[in-house]
Image 1 (cartoon, rainbow, N blue to C red):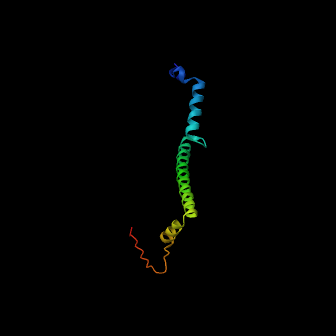
Image 2: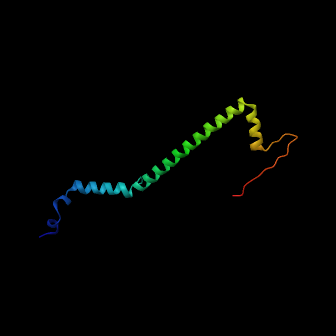
Length: 99
């Protein structure tokens, strides 16, 4: 009795061996293996989330710009809040919270 007779016939199939070898190579040893594909998918999802965030910020900024161009009171509000500007007869007190 030889060693080859102990191996089941389905394990001797050259197509099965080639398929298993190919799948193993593609999943673990190839330049674009499974781990790299998962990492790229995660990075793509992060970039899409960042894109949504920045698109939302752009919309908010455009609305604020439109409001500033159309309303003089909003210009004064922004000047007071962001740039701490004041009128001549006013005192300005800045209160900050510690983190």
